[in-house]
Length: 111
Image (cartoon, rainbow, N blue to C red):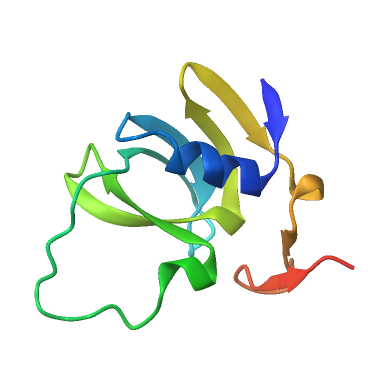
């Protein structure tokens, strides 16, 4: 298993061009989830506009292949990525952001 940073993981996901991949991450309620998803599927808005921009919070919209619905992947809580027949471990030390241990995954810049 190779080790990469979150920026490289984001780049690999964006370059996947609709291919199915798998990620493991920590959800907002502190449980670990595995998501089998893909990019490239077009979302049709239901009338309400999102109250935030996903890019500002280091999130990527994905299509969940099992639940047949759109989900947001928080790159700040990413643990593993399996894409293009390769498995990657996300190294927090190599990333530009880290997860605060005090509360629910607040982002703070590394010093």
